[in-house]
Length: 130
Image (cartoon, rainbow, N blue to C red; front, side, top):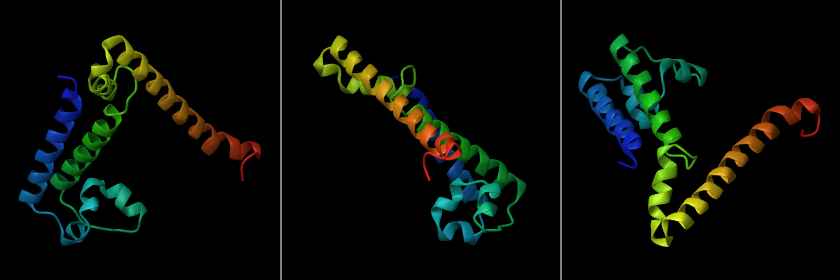
């Protein structure tokens, strides 16, 4: 139950991937399997123009969103599945201690995201970071 969201997203992604392969995808996408996960709009940004049927495009977008949801939900942030997975992994230390460690990791993770956003987006406009 702890990782129901993560496992649900991964399972749905696998079903969609199998459906895409069953329907048939262009050879250009099969040359590099990572291309299967990215919608046509993102592939065009990197210079890959592939004609896809509308069904494959829709499945590719749903696959992309499900993979992003699985990755986002697996982060060890309080109230996400990744947090509860971490608590259950640390449960041998005792519940209270596991929760304290998990909250510390959650806050550290959120602060690292916040600082990276600050240094990547705000600081260059202030002229502090080149």
